[in-house]
Length: 118
Image (cartoon, rainbow, N blue to C red):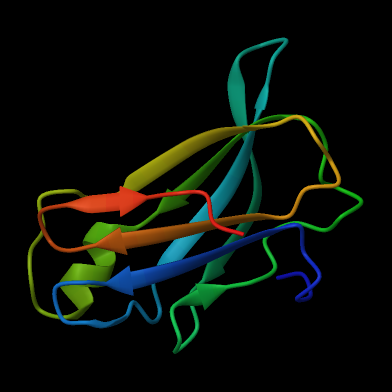
């Protein structure tokens, strides 16, 4: 994990129980446009507050298409529950490198919502 100054952060909330989604595994990928294959950049796990701060360094952050994959199925399984979605993938494009991107995921066992925060 990178430091808090990472240009990309995430926050996951378990809206069914009204708590942060702690210990949820996730991964960041970048699309290689030449061969149209996703390259794994980093992996992480949300902290007790459901946050995953340092997914990529400012130096590694370049223009392109990215994918943030949340392992929601394993999270719900760790709580002894099943879910409809085994994972959630959020694909987004970075064009302005000065931006700081925050991607919160609000989820329950049978629904999810994601948005670009600040």
